[in-house]
Image 1 (spheres, rainbow, N blue to C red):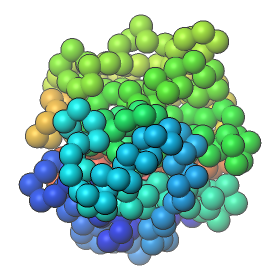
Image 2: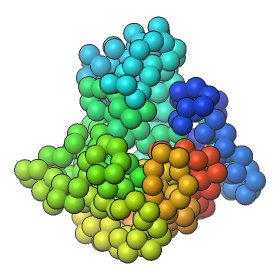
Image 3: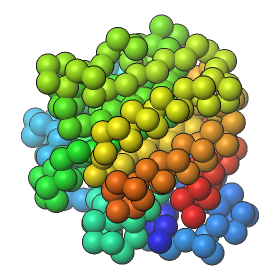
Length: 310
């Protein structure tokens, strides 16, 4: 069973009309979902809100309270100038996290093992600060929840967003049980300037992290040349749960990145990871929409993920 989260509450996470991460992104995705008839083939779930204690599994109390205060006032930045506060940002982000966690519970109980949350995968947020349009790191919260509530240790996180998933990588850089694979635009050319090939983890976790930086303009040929290494890396470590951050800003024509994948790359990643999930994880996989600022691209790329999950 494939379950998609859709609703106005999930669409609330956006930084205003005209911003690359605007509140219209979810509707661009859904219009294409309906156009392709995929809405008839999945189970549609309403967004769900998380609790403060869920957020606190990953984030510091000091930062959590800072977001609450600035959410009430709607003023200032939550980082150093990329991520503005807006009125209700705390609640909006809580719906992103809550939808992930509701999907996680569905997956763990076997009700729907393949989950897609389009407005999710906020992979830049650190434990103590926002970053790069990401207020709270929902992927990090899912990882901590899998550990603390469900006793799942060996988790694979795969990221195909154009930007390196630095908020996840550095939070778990020393964690040998977080299997991390990230293919992205080279940090010498794109924010956040991290994710180099020699970054493979620290301490006991050396060798459990795989970063594949690609040059600007990297296309499907580059993606398919790299994918077997990613898949083998994940398979060899036999994960118990898979997270896919399916950022569509790696598709050609994005306004703020320089990659040139086609939507089919996203479909391929999802299809192959679903097979790995079937083999090692009792089918359990959550895909998160991630970035993507060309509305046509995100609509097509994310629906390729949904189609692959079906």
